[in-house]
Image (cartoon, rainbow, N blue to C red; front, top):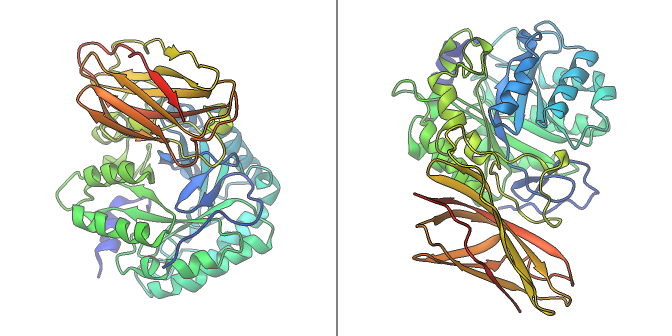
Length: 456
């Protein structure tokens, strides 16, 4: 997103292959299929916002405020010279702030915005030179930092140049020894309305010798219908290409992005999203925190943080910061364990069933609860003998309903619920554990049910 909203919208309106886990020894955050996973194999789904650090370098409190609002990721605007350059010391401080506030840090170079159309824009090759100059503070941060090589690197003039320029930038990053997860934005000021990124994604992904690049689409006025959003996302899903929504706004008038569809589709598909932006826009309609005040959220801020499919309801902290870590390579949810501001009760106590010698035990715990909704996590432990699979059953007594589950096959028949292991977490050695979770709805009370665990 350019700093001026109107210019970006105007500019935007002018006008089969699957990946597997890379064979190299992945360092830190990396791509696995269409997912981003941590070094331990836990899936990480970005839920966060953009922060315009390069223009507001003194607003360092924003990192803590963004975290307190519920985010697990912040995309940080940097400059290598088009604006006042962010030095290595400053970038180190940004990384430290992200880590101190348990945020995954997506660092992006904004200098490239609109290259080919904006005469002031830098090339992607110049952007790589900036990252090379920062290598001393970036090396060793692969668990915490994603490098977004260049923001919206091509405008609407000759967007076809994006493919070769992006592939070359990725290769130059790798030849300079960067092991980080790389993120690349589409052309057309990030909105790819001429489908250059969509139609050449495989070429760009193949350019990465480490197969560790995620594509990023920016969604504003080009994506003002649900059909345009769904069709675009479907193409990436059907081709097995990793994708995040690196920027998007909200529908403040009928010509703008259909953010409701965007949010619901992102959650349904486990796609990361990063809204634009925390504060400081020249056109403040896209500010989430008015005047950088976390206690004065705008309509947009309230919607993205506290609404359905929003950040607070769907963000889960990265396990590198001490969060729950399931077995290696197991999928994990994008759900926050923190209740929303409207939470009226504390998380309920857990309930468990003892294992038999060759059986299994289950511990059910409500880990987050808010008005009308809750998150539950269930831990399964094998008994004194190894098991090949497990099935849990319970009956809700208070009208609760499961709406979305991860790491298990969960089905319901009225109040009766059955959860069966996924393909990867059924076999457990004696005493070993795994876990799954779900989102649910409730009314009245949200008592913990008795859970029965049966091993096979």
